[in-house]
Length: 290
Image (cartoon, rainbow, N blue to C red):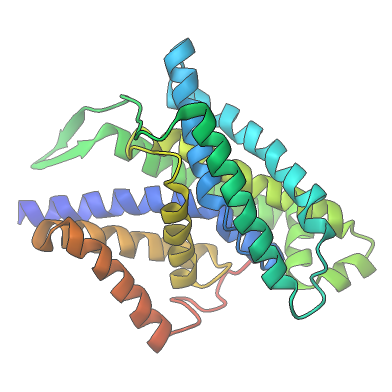
């Protein structure tokens, strides 16, 4: 019984980590319906930046978190304003063009990171101990990352619901034409949204690299994992993404313990395929979409 409880707790905490890595992609898709294929590379870039700050200046990932987020915010604003805003989305091939553009961006970011940091796996030794809650040992780093993911999800939800800019972003997500007709600067809102999504990815990387070793080619796997999560929860749904993250976390931890690490990856995608077949709108459908 103690083993099962430990696995559930670890699964819930890993779910928080997965949510942290997927929140930015969920925000971008919810507003612009753009799947950013460079999202995982932004996560890796944020993590490697944190690695440099730790190695050179002794800064912890917690301190590197806002710095990585700020850098990726600038990069995201430049990408959206300089590239994606110039792509015609109105035509049927508009979404394909954004996919190709972000696919190319993924290679640019990954290869630039390779030139700077090399190809080896790298991590940061931070909060590696654990504390006991009864019979359950809780890793400190995993708990800190999961709690920050929850706080960030609540903060973004509050920003979208209770601030003027957040409500303008939601209006743009519902109807860009209607938002423009009401006098909103849709182009500026899209730039802010993409930049914020990139910042969330960079900040997530700064923390997650203390839990999962990164190499410059890890971005593709992280993008697939993040897209799986938001599709499972219902594209653009924040509550759905949260539930999907916890489901995937528990499923992966249980599968790793009982079936082994190789089978765990297959089990996660089997769950994803089952949802696509039996509930293609995601776990919560349109509930709490941006």
